[in-house]
Image (cartoon, rainbow, N blue to C red; front, side, top):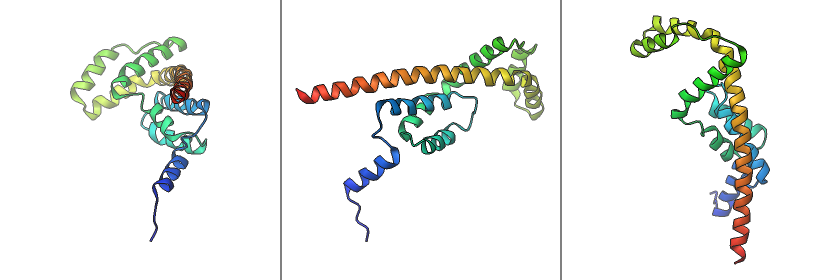
Length: 164
C-alpha cells in the first residue's frame, strides 16, 4: 500500500503548481493570465492559460488568477469599449442601426435574427481583435507591475515581521 505523507503531498503540490518562483516570474505568470483573460480568444481563456502555464513552466495558480480577473460583469463593458477603441484606431464606422439590431436580438433570440446580427457585426471583427488585444496588453503590463510590487512588499513585510 502506498503511504502518502503530508510532506510528500506538499512537495507534489508545490511541484505541480510551481509556487516557489521568484517575484518577477510569479508576476509574469499573473500578467500572462490577465493578458489571456482579456484577449479576444473568448471561450479559450482557461484552457489556454493552463496550457501556457505548463508550457512555460510558470506558476499555475498565478496564471489562473490572472485569467479569472476578467469577471462576467466586466465582459460586456470591456469588449464594447475595446471594440470601439479598435474601430477608432482602424477608422471603422459602426454599422447603422446597430443598437436597434442588438435590442431585437436580445428580445427574440431567433436563429434568423442571430444570423442577421452576426452579419451586421462582421465589419467589427478586426476592431474587436485589435482593440481587445491592445487592451489586454495594457492591462497585463499594469497587472505585472502591480503584482511584482505587491510580492516584493509582502516578502519584505514577512521578513521584517519575522525578525521582531
